[in-house]
Length: 491
Image 1 (cartoon, rainbow, N blue to C red):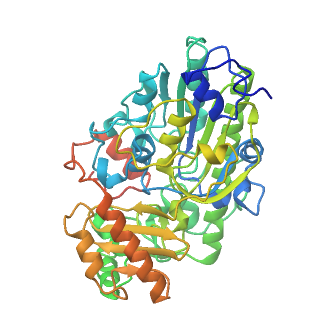
Image 2 (tube, rainbow, N blue to C red; image 1 turned 90 degrees about the horizontal axis):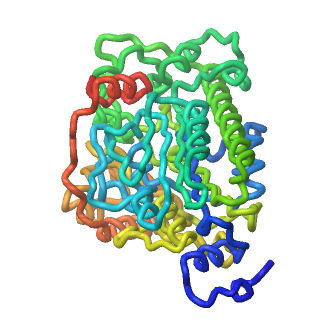
Image 3 (cartoon, helix red, strand yellow; image 1 turned 180 degrees about the horizontal axis):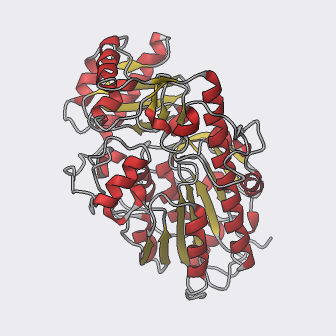
């Protein structure tokens, strides 16, 4: 492989920065490398073979991993689609650039990844699956093309549009293509043969109906036909440890309805159907990668595969991703393939956050990340250099009944209480009883104290967020969200 000096580059031009960032690989005729970002919504890391899944669910993703750098411990900053992607696009934590509930939209206060790349001459396009990435969420900034024509669509719908866009662009200019699909999101049941690939198609228990509507209707082993009165504050109560909160939530749920008990066989069935959704997503991903390769882009582009958050599958008595910040919901997929598969097959064990994506891309293309972005570039890890990772990762939950979490070598500490936008939150956490009902974490008091210290430190570093925008969402989007388990969105 030629060195940077043998390429004759004497100055730190944009191309030189790009070439060195990807291991001094030969430059392409069009200069800086294209960027392709693929988001598979609601994909749990532990269901991907490259992350240790026991079943052979993801042959295409696993093949990609063998040519990519895999970040084994990547964690999302939110467990809802809009704020999680907003953190990826801005490099900021959710409460700095939006709220974390389902009624809010992104403000224009902070530059986005697409805007940064546009400044550096990139052609930009996004083909997304609607829902929480619909234009009403205001995540469109910087994209010359932003297609969101169908709510809760699949990679089956969005990736062909992305490939068609590649056929129309200026081949002498770099591009940033973002594609997204809800393939692993409820409703889990996918078309034949994937829907029942890992589940018994003849099962007639209560779960058979749940996978065709929304598994979020199952709470504490009971299936509720009607959750129309549930608000995000009540959602948080469902997860709270205090008995009086559980009792209050139970009373809200059972008002006017009799729940149906869900047994262990139902749980196995639901998890099997979810696994089918993962295999379906993998097949659609493989289809897209074939199209990228056919167009000669596979070895030109930096290709990043991510999930925005995971999914609870009954581990804590609930389904979905509304009410917790454990590994089931926050451990995400993050794999980066450099041109020509440079350094492929390496696994990086250090902790990383999903907001590290923006500064990583910026460094790889010789751009400057926006001032104030908290993300840390992962380019050193991509080059094979020593990379210890972060000491801690941080995640935020819904806003009306605040849940925040810190994860480190000591374990995970979660706090539930006042919103993080409250000015006294760090003081409250610092003064509260660490063994009180607001905290859930490791039993070791020293570990709990260490994690609380980090949680307070982190909160004090955040810039005050913008005023929460509660702009009304279009009626069609509100209905689509509620049909897919977002019961805290007003009808």
